[in-house]
Image 1 (tube, rainbow, N blue to C red):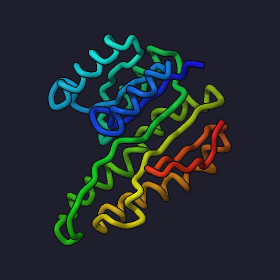
Image 2 (cartoon, helix red, strand yellow):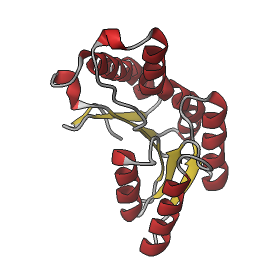
Image 3 (spheres, helix red, strand yellow):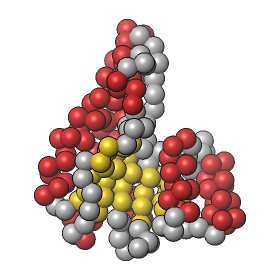
Length: 192
């Protein structure tokens, strides 16, 4: 069955690849990108060209995950256009390298906001729709670097995202929303 899916952080990397793969599989995919008229305008054009060339349902939605206004508007647009939302893929994030003391508190707060708190923004906007539908799937993409091999600052932030997922799991399960945390080595926590 064709699903309506939103992928955050879909302008490049895993987000762009996941959006295209899911669209190729026959789903309606909204590739969430920030600054679609500015910094990611080229990626917007590439997504549209990809959709036209491959005959898939791949759309771009303005979705700056560090902005409540942008997230609320983007999720509202998806629901208005499609009438539903079936899957949320939390992919947006940024890896930072360097010793902890190299980061100002403001930089650390920005990284935490993007990598951890952004998922709560998207959930606040999207989960009411999944509850209304009585089903849905939430997928968190995280990094296997939490096990080592990268600077401690990144591991700390990435672990917080994973812990946040674990904390939300019982709440989402009570509402029949599936949770799938997908580090590079995938592990299913729950499915529909």
